[in-house]
Length: 431
Ligand code: ATP
Ligand code: MG
Image (cartoon, rainbow, N blue to C red; front, side, top):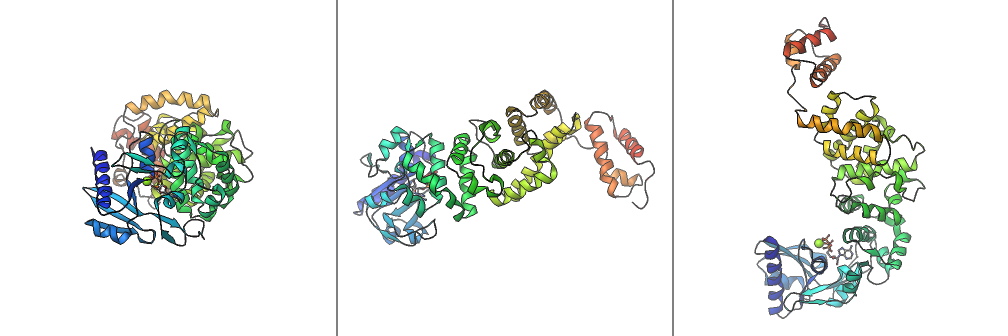
């Protein structure tokens, strides 16, 4: 039971600090999660002991955020962040305070972002310590900034996305003054780094509550600053034309397909070609989406390749009048096939190409029961032995022969080489 161990070890940290004469509590997310009856991801401890004192009291420590008074304590196999109560100084870059001063529990609660995140818990007395009204907001399912919402969002713009993340994840209503402050502050979002934005978007768009998160991004005007080149003046989410809202509702989704669905949504909704969603997946358009995905979501090259691959294969089956088995098997053989099928389902669900996609489903089901990527009957080596030289047409011949194999038209390697000879009768000697 690693979770119970984590709680036990975090409690030992608190007990040790107390025994040394300090105030110490569980703080932030783990308290919120406990009150919601959810397992805590990790335990943070807040204390009045200064960082040096924390380092003296525990054997295995690491100063991770020295400037902020954060010490990582390793105890019984658990990593626990121990932070000294602090007040944040002035913010100058829209993200981090210029300085911090060590302070009291109450002041430490005040510098936290939302009331539900501003709670402490005393694990020895089993008591919540609430300076910010977080318990009431948690029971009423309300997300509320601590203090003046405008000021809090002005000092750290990342809180715009944190608000969306917590509200969506826990099904909270954003309290009106906080919501109004978000709407006003949303144009400032690009002032924080693309990496941080991307990191929050990943956490918002890949979890089972991604639908709610996406709606909130639109509602609070956050998509336009994220995707200025695409969104233009479009600030309203047209729910009837949203792929992302239809992508695996209630389920976790992979980040590449979430990004692609979001880019297609915005592209489609901002564009004129309402009927022609599929045209945005054509090679030249897809390349633009991949470039935008790189900038906006800071995806790894593998993830970008996945996006390109999904676009290529989904476009392939939708833009071909009657895709043959070979095309569907090649589609299913890709590592990204699950994500590509999720996109197809969403496209059908949004009312585009619905009949065609529904007709493909039983074929996908049937084909995926068999082998979708059998070893090729004809390889480049065989072709070379037959007198062919590698050249431009070489791969075309191999592809065409493999397609025939996937379509069940070739019985054995002899039939494969015979087809190759038919496609390129005399081996071009200097091709
Ligand atoms: P999660 O379960 O997603 O980790 P969390 O509440 O633990 O949620 P963290 O980002 O780990 O969130 O931060 C821990 C705590 O630190 C928060 O609960 C909050 O009190 C405080 N905090 C974190 N980031 C900010 C911020 N940008 N502004 C103000 N307070 C913050
Ligand atoms: Mg946390």
